[in-house]
Image (cartoon, rainbow, N blue to C red):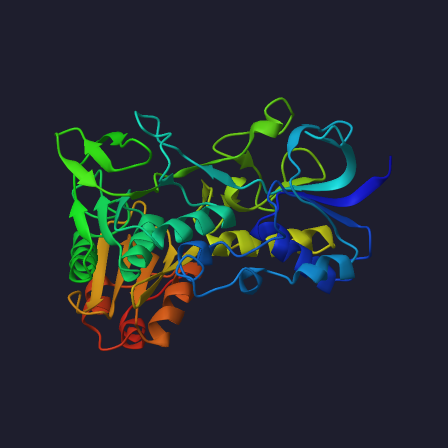
Length: 414
């Protein structure tokens, strides 16, 4: 049995971007094997709830690398392949097919799987979850004939799906557990803006709701709630979170705590085994805490970083957490981590489509949200968070520009 130099377990964005970076760094034919449970070569995930779901993007356009890229670089992509266990002592990966792979270096990029509903009617046709290309295809196809849709959940994925369905002419209702949309992240003012915007585009909200059952005969016809309310629909999409895929490593020496535990170099405690993307619980030196991130930018950046580590550039992964979203005709971006913030600063008119929100902890900027704002605000968000700098809240709130706030504030490195 030949020993493979690099194996990536998982065929998502980590695999696509790591392969691209390795190829640019002189990867030789036969050095890299990608083991993927998917039936497609790596593709971008954000379009699944945006452009692809809306029918604007094609399968080819969302691939990270063209399909021929892998053959041209001698990369073996095993599709429809699933790992069942890893022998860390022998560096041996066991596949469900019965095949074993010996490796020198393994990148665990198994990602996360959706949390599913466990209640009466959850096996009815017409209930969907969104994680893969096939999931997006199925929702898109059903939306062509659907009249009413229920979106269960209030996170950014649920918001994106609801906006696409509404724009396709499907009467859409969002069912929220909380009293406002995305309460875990949005400030009350932000929730109010987005709820008003969605309502103006025909989306209805049912708040503080507990789903009891999905009802119907041949398929979903309504969502029954605990207070005897009922939301009629012929299409339901549940966005109730994900959990990291760690089962293949449960009997190994690899530490598992809310994902695969790695250090600031994305290394596990087992030499030659790394983790990246949604499954990686990594040491974030910027915020001095452990973090597992389920967003596109993190998977891209960690995939690229693994390639650099493997090719001799051993530097810690230092990165400002980031994500973006597109809903209706709005686009917004977010940087950092608002957990533990003791002050929030709003800039712009929160009843308009252009505003920013800044979270501070002891005057240090720890997170920022920007929608249709100037490049100077976007640039300052990333720079200030990365440099652990401080700014006076009132000066940031009242300054004509963030550069004025920077000049008026006493900045110090964190």
